[in-house]
Image (cartoon, rainbow, N blue to C red):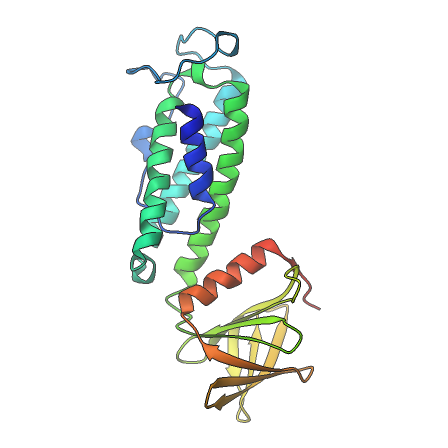
Length: 256
């Protein structure tokens, strides 16, 4: 059972999505927890000690980290549940509800120190790290989607990919360029200024990116500062923002 639950948690946290609240404060694990139901899968004798309700210092350290994750989890989900742009994605909501179930089930397992073998704790640590990656993605989506409501995508002649999103007032924007070999990115998101000649300048306070934007029949023609011209077609803001975040997480940033 433990391996199955950890597998569920590991698999679902790799998906970027919205979650129903779970693992609330009333479910936080303490060193006074007692076992009400036996686990379905018997643990090998040499891996456990008698379940007396006492935890080792190492086990308690993991439990404290887990409880902190639950607090952070619920804070992010409470915020995300107020964003209609996320709630509208039914598949995304379903996937992340599975994560909520997995978290609740693991919370029950943590109530018995006999379950907290070295193998279990090692897998739990990895799962918590991946959960934080997902929570950071959810938080970013929840913050950006209500703002960046217009988006486009395109490629240049060398196969580099360009993702562009901005708000209707054209005061906030984001641009991500992914190299053709998908190993490097140039990324800028922040306040945006549009000049009279159609130049859009995005600044994050440390880095600035400017491009000339022209409306054409197929969509937009973007001319970068180095002269590169990119034809860009309209795209769903959610898909573009999600791609931006994934690129930022998985590739090397080479802003100069």
